[in-house]
Image 1 (cartoon, helix red, strand yellow):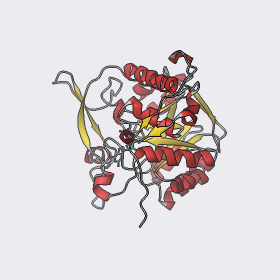
Image 2 (cartoon, rainbow, N blue to C red):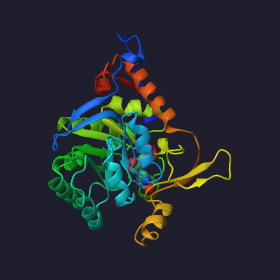
Image 3 (cartoon, rainbow, N blue to C red):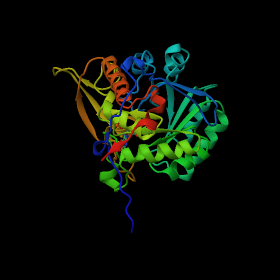
Image 4 (cartoon, rainbow, N blue to C red):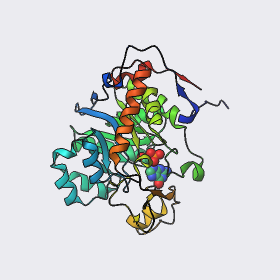
Length: 327
Ligand code: 5GP
């Protein structure tokens, strides 16, 4: 058997190089991509809050709108509330999320238009998942469709060929993920960002590296590896904008409950408990309040700009062309 060596974000560092940039303010952090199938423009800062119900709230989307960062609004937001929000300018950087059940397909089809849709399945290798992508593409020809998760070039190719503009890549590296401990399945996230980013690029499509970013540096590494976008969940937990999460205000600072979307807590909350053929592949924990997400957004922007300065990158879109890594 031949083993292919893979790397985590912590395994690598980006090498600095002589730079013409004198200041971080010379760096443009906004990307602009024309999507493969929809021909829609994906613009803004290429960071997206993961569609986890504790962090991907409407309040989060309103706060991050000012930073031009994206949120994949979670699928349990009430339909009426979602419709009201989607009519507002503040929803400009919002995806709407869905799973792959018939019920969810019916729910999404009730919308006349959606700017962006995230189709999410824990296992994006199922043929039935590809069928859902095809159906949603037929109903929404001009929407930006992001679908996943897979973690290999083969998986990316299948998702893009089924009609998605963006392949969401990452299995087993999420902060609240238990997949590799329960099933042995996984792929280290730096290698996912690199290999899946390249695969998407070759198909003239986009890759969103999903999971495993514990710091702004990991976001720099994922983009530097060649993923076009980065999705993060745990990084955004503990901020005031997680206003619909469960908070313990009896402690100082208060703490919020963060859990994976297939944890026991999430299953109890939305599906009346774990079905007996399933195991929980999500973890849960309490996270201390860190204040406003504006501070994190500033920190991420500053880190990205600094990384670009170190690598002589004027436009974040080109970071991967300028990044060399050491192990
Ligand atoms: P993070 O940025 O927190 O490291 O990773 C976020 C990603 O973890 C999500 O976008 C999603 O792909 C994944 N995730 C969220 N909840 C769960 C879960 O309960 N189980 C697993 N296996 N993955 C999860």
